[in-house]
Image (cartoon, rainbow, N blue to C red; front, side, top):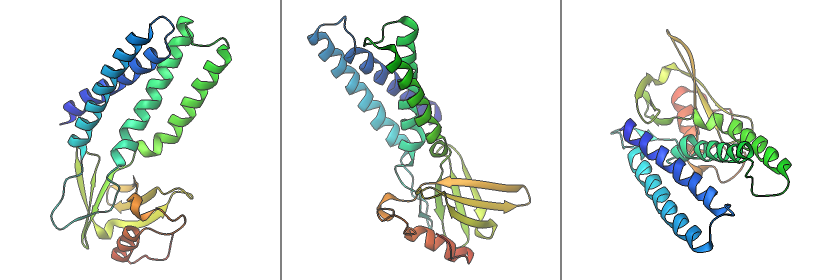
Length: 209
């Protein structure tokens, strides 16, 4: 499964890069741009759909999924888009073919893409979280770890963003797990999602945001 997903995300990145190059190219006629963009967009969408089918969270009997089903988009696809934009823009600078008269804009875009990527690092660490009253299951989409609910010491929000960390403490040390709650539960700012309340009730800590 991991190899298939890696292939699909590489195809996604290449298709996205081709679309950017084609749209902003000054050496292609309009019809050629349309054809290449359409084919690349079709390949991009197919690779995205295929990747989502591979990564779609599986149901685990007697466990409740408390993380968002859209975690894979934030974990894999948004960082891929930012990285692709950065390398595409950088290649334009190196080859001196930036589509514009002011090269300053190209450098500014590179800085912007790097900043966006840095902001995405926490999302890249996010996990799928399943819980019941006795255990918590953590998945990075390719492997699974199971912990006792008694090993959960804290569940905290990261600043004011709807990203939560679960602190696991056991004989191997302290492990902090990052996850995104379901978006349906996070539509109202500063309100603790219901799934977080349930998890805290399991560990006997229900007094934090």
